[in-house]
Amino acid sequence: MTYSSSLLRLLDERGYIHQVTDAEALDALAAKQIVPGYVGFDATAPSLHVGNLVSIMLLRRLQQAGHKPVVLMGGGTTRIGDPTGKDEVRKMLTDEAIEGNIASIRTAFERFLTFGDGPTDAVMVNNHDWLGQIGYIEMLQKVGTHFTVNRMLSFDSVKLRLEREQPMTFLEFNYMILQGYDFRHLCQTQDVRLQMGGSDQWGNIVNGVELTRRMDSTEVFGLTTPLITKADGTKMGKSVSGAVWLNEASLPSYDYWQFWRNCDDRDVGRFLRLFTDLPLDEIARLEALEGGEINDAKIVLANEATKLCRGEEAAKAAEATARETFAGGGAGEDLPTVEVDAEGVRLGAACTALGFTASNGEAKRKIAEGAVKLDDEVMSDPGFLISIAPGESRKLSLGKKKHGILRGA
Image 1 (spheres, rainbow, N blue to C red):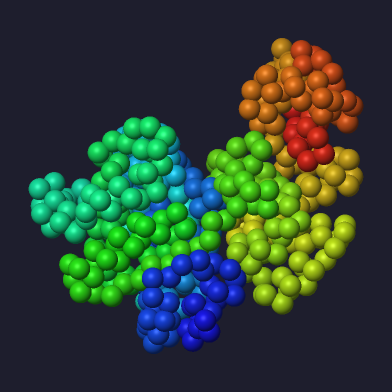
Image 2: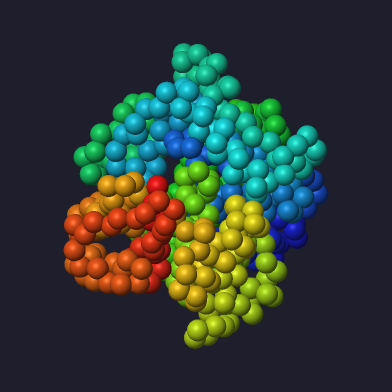
């Protein structure tokens, strides 16, 4: 389909569109007026991760195309837990923890979006502000009649739990009703006409579209992105050492930069389109590079993605550290660092402390494989005691891509 609106053309050219509830009508609406659109995020941790980044970039593209991004923080729904893609019941968080997470997450959004009071400025809202005020009986009377249990049981998020004989609480079962109500509420109060999200949210988004039409006779729209996985089939939000967090406090900028620098050759072009603002002709040039030159494209990807999330200075520092570490054999200042006291630290424990390994058992296996080096010398004894004088430092490496500094306290 050929789109007339700059919004859908931009999303289509960069590979964001998977499903749209009524592409022709949404295209016509976006061509003639500002369309407020939202994506919902639950506040289960102090930071979102790379798996959430495509949804954040959707909001950025919305604003770039002259429309209004609405960031919906699930202060209310986080108290329930989205069962989509989950095998287990989510751990309940305190009100204070949820509010703290939302405040922390906002700092990341401020790098990607322009917030303010203008017609296309982004706003952040919290669904606890309205869900927390709704009486249970009132909710059942007003909204419950528009949902059938038959259809709710057909949703993948529910079927997965039932097929695996994993428990689903009645609280979680209500999540899809509340998410649908969110869309209707935002349509009424913020004139939101579009909900966006990942492909796994399609059913929940359609619920909101249908609920708003039935209760208010208002036409709203849903749009989802393809499931974003890496070329090896693994999820975008994960790396070998764990989640790739967006906030600096949860993951050093050097590690964030390295995540993009170490991507699969096959992912470079797609990731440049989705996660950077580079022009499409420049991306086409970069993804056409072959052999060793593809590493130049990966460095551009790492720099551009890190610049958006952490700022230009962080990107420059990470690249400089990588260049010094890999090309010069040095130990750049931006590498992850662990302070070592006068008693020293065992080699295996140092690997885990730097985040190279998830446990001392895994560290022992890596050391046995000859993958661990101390100051570029292969080490074989996980119990080796590393002693460092105050102010001195030593470089610890796992394989060719993981490096860290042990510094004497």
